[in-house]
Amino acid sequence: MPLRYSFVVFAVILALCFLALAETGQPQQVTGFVIDSACAFTKGLDKPISRDCAIKCAKAGSPLIILSDDRTVYWPISDAEPAVGQNARLLPFAGQHVKVDGRVYDRGGSKAIVIQKIHEVAKK
Image (cartoon, rainbow, N blue to C red; front, side, top):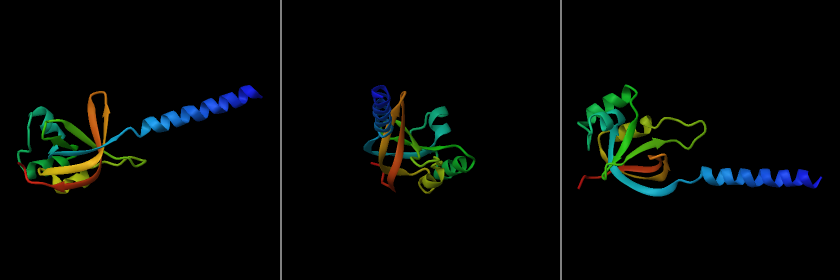
């Protein structure tokens, strides 16, 4: 009987560890452009060519990203289950300079952000 209890205690501790690891995102504020991901990588852009171009690419299915002022790429993600794409939420800001408050996750050199608030800001 004691072995069974040890297994249950171990399973509970393991589950708590996984829950703690799942919520590792750090609150952060990011400022940058909402831009088409393909253009950010293939064209090396620091800002969108135009708002219309970013909208056209997003409507064609290319994921929109936040390209921060320091050129870091943040992939907008959902924390819902099942996860949902973020293009619809970002489309009103396509091609614009924005400030985003959210939880940033870092994995394997990539950064993702669960957006809590987003609004347009003037570029300095």
